[in-house]
Image (cartoon, rainbow, N blue to C red; front, side, top):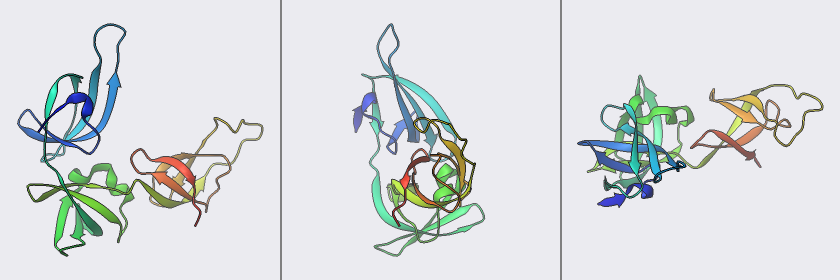
Length: 188
């Protein structure tokens, strides 16, 4: 199905130059002169290689039909991540290249969505937000304004994140999985 380039979204799969690409990040650029264009960061589904391309907003691209299956992360074996379809109990594997940076968020039993093309799993979609414990947080600097000041912190899974000054080690916080940013203090 053909769509306009400005309708592409992260997570979509397109066909470009004879390959299947998963969209990672999109940026709309509007230069002072000329028309707007789309800067797209994408990953080749087969090789795992990343690429950046630009399209004018009115150009069309071929969007591939991707089916979503509710799945559960089971375990890691070497560089292979194993999942199970929760409806059919069928197990499948994805390589570290196919998963990319999402591997940092995987914990046993996590519910994810497996994206399949022609029945073959090619990628996963994580929950929008996840809760983690802060294991390391810098001390607060006195007389620092609270509005724009964030300090570095480290989560239990090793991810480094910028957190507000009132968050201390041991606090559970909610993280946006698409960009790794702090959302709020956890209520649990």
